[in-house]
Every structure is written in structure tokens, then in C-alpha cells.
Length: 296
Length: 269
Image (tube, rainbow over all chains, first blue to last red; front, top):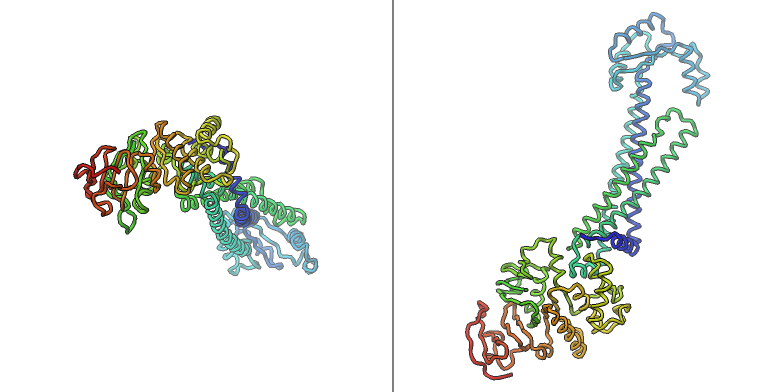
């Protein structure tokens, strides 16, 4: 089968131009839906990284009463030693704990004023073998161990955040899928109109014995180009918004979110995935159109 | 070249468009396909192009049973069959040269071959000077010449023409017929469906007549109508066939399509 590249390129370009409004609609829909897909993917990676970071630094914090006695602290320390789920603990005394509180509460001076080193509870910051066991472990320390004010695992607060981002991701993905389906239909329709606009040519081609693939390829390529262009626009949008978020995090030194700035490798992989989905949508839409409306 | 073996084709819920057709067309023949509208002429051509498949029977083109042809080989069959239609079917946004070249481009011929073959065939049809015109700038006869050029440019074994003179005045039709005759003399088989009595009667070539899907006459050097050979006035039954200029008439059995009786003709037309 001799399908000359020049012929196919010329035909595809002519088709796209003749059908430009339709093509534009399809391209923009692909762009919007794939931007959402890309955003959802990056959001998920950022959240997972950030949560992983928090989980690794501290899995469990055991706050002592400010008035806890040395004996009580020693008892807790030995209980920690006997808990197999805990791998390692560091103890912050009043002074260290006060310094940490000042750092974390830097944005609300009134709260700091209320604290003195003596009234700041001392803290055991522990790492767990498995962060998922945090709630069971914290429960044992919360069951009335003398001198313990409260044991908190960050995952309790993080879980809320994780759930929020999960819901957000699902919403984004659902919207993206709906938009992807509609962009597929738009591409299908664009190709259908292209086929209709060129029915004379197609009729003559069949008559003089052009092969089926020769007739089909320009139309399929048209769909592929539409998907690809939409994907490239989406990739740029995702890239720019990622830069924007990273810049804001760095510029305002939101160090808690430091890990939400994704490494280049992750971004490149996501962008490639976005382009791939765009190509698949384009090819799928045009294949269906060619099969349904181009009876060769 | 072309053989129909007891071919029957019917469309959904209708009487058969073709029924029990058996005939053979040899290489280099010029054949008129006549019959009233709805007699099955177009179905005959469609089956040859494999735009339709017979319900039963088989069709052979150039030694191949085209019913056995796999889907992807159909285009290669069509490269051996050039088509001309009543409505020309030219591409309005391409020049004459581009229209003819298109037929070769889409089957992947190299560009230098296209250039020489297109200019040759345009000379042949007498449009050597009008290659840069658009179809709408040409007369009907000239447009049909372009269509013939497009059908012939790839040197097909057979030219199929479906009422090629149907849109043309008699003088212009004469020109097209001369052209088809010239093409026929190069050894190309021509099968032409027509209603044009004058053309059939003056050309005196083989005439195949269909009536309501049945082969009612197959006559070498025939004329369009039944002329004075009609043995009865009942249309088609019994049908009459003439063997060339011989003073014989043959009755065809309408059921089998075979010769039922041969008798002397009642007079010359």
C-alpha cells in the first residue's frame, strides 16, 4: 500500500482548514478535559508526597501534661520502649517544645504570648513502623495513662485532608471523563462532517480502486491531529499552573507544603500521559466515525 | 473476460432485480445493455463493480470469481474497471488535469507516470488544450470526455458506462460514442447501458436486453427495439434473439434463458 506522506499531509491539512470551527471546538474540549485530567493527576501526586513527608517525619506525638512528674515521664518512656510498633522516639523538653511551638505558631503572636516554657507541654515525637497503625497506638496512650495529656497521630488530621483531596480528585476526574467523552463525540462529529464534505472525492476514490486504508488514513489522521493539538494545549496549561503553584509555595515560603512542589520527572510523566490520552481520544473518535460513516 | 453464471440478485422485499442471468462477454467486445428503467441494467453494472453481491450464481471478471474476492481486494478489481456515468461525477474544485490525475494519485502511481499518462489520455479524448479548465467551464460533452479520460487513464480491461449519453444532445452523444469506439479498438471491452435508440441502431454492436431482471435478448450486431422481428406483441415473451444478420430468429425460454426454438425471420427491419 503506497500512501504517500505528502498526499496524506496535504489532505489532512485541507480537511482541518475546511472544517476549522468544528475542529476548534473539538480541540478546545480536548484541551479543557485534559487540563482537568492533568491537574487531578498532579494534585494527587502532590498530596501523596506531602502526606508521605509528614508521615515519615512524625507518625505520633504524645503530649504530656505540663505538670507531669519526672516519674510519669519515665513511665511513658518505658511504655514506649515496650511498644513494638514504635521504632524511634525523640523527647522535647519544656524549652525545646516551646521553641517548636513558637515556630509552628509564628503567624499568631497572641497564642505564643499565652505560652511560657513552663506551661508548654513536653512532647514525645515518635516514628512508627507503619504509619497506618497510628490510630491504634495513639489509642493505647489516650486510655488514661497518667501524665499523658493527649496522643495525636498526624494522620487523624491528615486523613480529613486526604479525604477532601480524594473527593476533589474524584470530582475532577468525573468532570474530566465527561468532557473526554464529549470531546470524543465532537471529534467523531468533526470527522463525520469532513467525510460528508468530501463524499464526492470518496466516491471517485472507491470507483477508481483506491484501497480502503488510503481513503481512511487522512480522516483518521485528522482526528489524531485534533486530539494531539488539544493535548498539547492541555499540557501547557497544566505545566503553567504547576509552575504557578510551585512559585507561590516557594515565594511565600509555605514550608509545610514544601513537598507539594513536584520534581521535574513526575511532571514530565504526567504531561506525557496527558498527550497520550489526547492521541487515544483523537484516534478513537475518528476510528468510530470512519467505521460508521465511511463505508468502503 | 466477463462471465455471469446463473446470477440472481434481489433487493429486500422486492421482485428480483436480476434473475438467472447467464452470459459471457469476451475481451474486446462492445456490448450495449438495454432495457427499460428498472430492468436491472444498473444492478448488472453494480454487481460487476462488486458494489453489490449476487444472492446466487457467480460472476467472473478476468478469470476471477469476484464473489470469492476478499473485502480488501475489491479495490484491485476496480482498477481493472473504468466507470463512466450519466452525471459525469467530476470533482468540481479540481481542474481537468487534476481530475484525471486524481484517479492515478489515489492508487499510488508515481508522479512522472501520472504526468505522461494524463497528457496522453487528454490528447486521446481531444481535450489536450483544456487541461487547466475547471469542470464548470466545460460543456456537457467535454465534461463527459474528461470522465471517459479518467476512466481510461489507468488502461482498464473493461469500461463500464451507465447511460453516458443520457445528459447529452444527439450530436454530442455521437462524439462520445466515437470516443468509446476508439477506446474499444484498443482492445478494451466496453459495456454500455443505454436508452439511446439511435446510438444502438447505428453502432450495430452486440445488444443484451434485460426486462424485469430477465435476460430476454442477446444479439450480435443488434438494434435497440424488437423491430419487425417481434413474433408477438407481448413484451418480452416470447423473446426474440437474432444471430447477427442471419435470417434466423431464436426464441428464448423465459424460464431458463436458453434457446427454445430457431425459426426463419419474418422479414428484414
